[in-house]
Length: 489
Image (tube, rainbow, N blue to C red; front, side, top):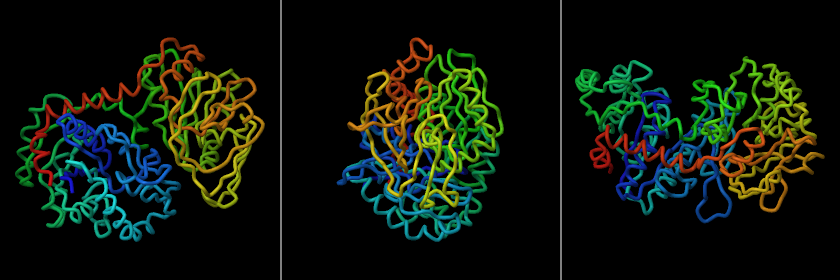
């Protein structure tokens, strides 16, 4: 087995994903063969990864896809063996080693965890094959001791696999001394012994001002500090992991094109918008529930959804159907991706109740198509071609359902020789099942040019690579990476 180290947080959204990606890139730059691993992830931002020895792909969290890029290796389903994709407020689809395992309510899932540990340990054995180092990311916090008995994401995994743990505290949210000391206080001895130290993340200002804080934490815990990481500005140029960040996304300065994106209740794969956000002349505005859309938006993008019918209902409750109709009347453009594409049609039917108890709803009626949900999920990476611009596309599909109707005779793309999507008669409304289409630089430049934006088409993948390099350099400067890598076992 490869040596390993694990980062766990004092809470959710403390920056573990970016830190793991940065440490992966730092290890790669040192010449190590490094791999990421996250036993359990909860996110509707999924990626398609290879299933070793099997044609086709499976689902993992986008975070582990990004971390694989940081390692310079293709992502595999073993990097994230358990993925939970929330569908309702109390239930989620459970994906195990890339494939749908079933649906579970929160309470039922706790009972299911014991069975899933075998899959986690199986993937753990496979992900380290041929590697020098595996950097593991926890989920939530090990301080949730009420869930400890069936835990597979934090100390339950660390103790079974024998992986030392570094605790991450987020100073930006406040109370970091109490959160670290409190975690030490309430952990059982077996778990506490797994922690080899801690680091502080998201520090703004003069780091020396926290010297007394380090002394206090050492007094309470006896743990060593591996360093204090400043606010990593380059992290904003990385793909977004999950919907936690949506609450912080807001309008910026005035730019050539404003794009409005509704925050659907079960929004999925909204990192499709990241390449557009990276364009200097583009402003992407995520619109929270209950708020009106900006009237000066030139484009509306309706993103993916884990629950298309439920999100259509919420869409109308928010009054967004009226906003969309007004935008269309003003001559604005509309793009729907995956679930957003389905929403743009006349109807969505779910005869098998795959998404829930509501089995049919009227769509938004801006494309002359209809969708029927089908049990078999399409999960694959694809190469395609844009029909309107005759330019290559690369992306992936993760969806249920089949969409048909007259507007599909005007496809938006051709995927593996098969028409995909639909375009309205006037060309201003389009939909596709393909995620990642805006990552194609030449297509994105031409698409933006058609909307009046000149000079688009930055090298988005190169921007991500540069951001990872910058983060790795920051971590080498502010953390004792020699000690961190040296403690891996």
